[in-house]
Length: 144
Image (cartoon, rainbow, N blue to C red):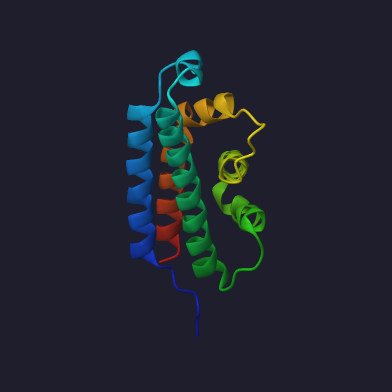
């Protein structure tokens, strides 16, 4: 008997959330690094929050895939990403990993750190989101 169960409905909902956050981020993120760096705190907070949400959704999707494909899960965020790297590919996994590291730094709010450049790059480097959605769709189809 196969105990693996992909929660396809949850994954699809999360992918829709991911698309929504990506579109929102494209609308609210200032167009240049200088404009972002000089933005009001509310703009920066909104951009940072959407980067965090994207990271959280990506990790949740990876956990759901991993649980459904590998039966059990163990370890932290990094081990989930590492275990899914073979299925997602190195480049896409590295983008997820980079976004997750930035998310963790933002969440822990290291006051002495300036993340303007990293957040701006994440807010404008969203092509990997489409790649992630497509790759997850492929994996879901293969493992239903």
